[in-house]
View: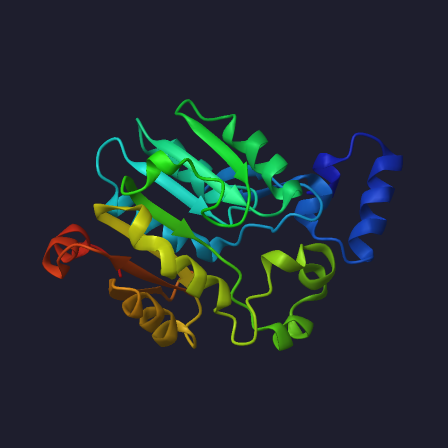
Length: 248
């Protein structure tokens, strides 16, 4: 990948030295592959992981026609870009507290034909009030690494990705609690909240959503080594009929 990306021998040498120093390959070449797409990733921005394709698959399955979609903690907005490339007539909003991530997300979303915008702010804060009660899909790959476990992560993550994109508080679920606390205000009647989590945290993630008035389901993928929790306001039967076919 470095050979294919470098334009001169001098640039290649510089790239190799950065990689030896531990910089993520995606930051060096400027992009990451996600769901078969090249997503631009600027230095310091969270690198999209393949496991998040689990959220993408279930978002696609649950999306109604002409969906309104909000991605919180969007980073590069890889999830929004991938969903927007699949679904026609989608209306996308992405938010992140990190201005570097928002600039990166805006560049990526500009490639879509559908309306899409990236807004800087804390979770729901920058969203237009007119979206309340109208969001069909609320997506969140929020940070869920416990603070004390940040030091155990690979060096390229803990040194080169924004701390705010990794640190989920003492048990890793602080941001999820804040997302769940206000989700019902924003969700449409048949809307769904999809949150990435880990297998060990899944039960508590589901409990957090349930305590905030949402019915829940844990979905996993062995192939992606991924786990997510889906919450909804409408009846469980209506939700189950939408996703009972296929892998869960």
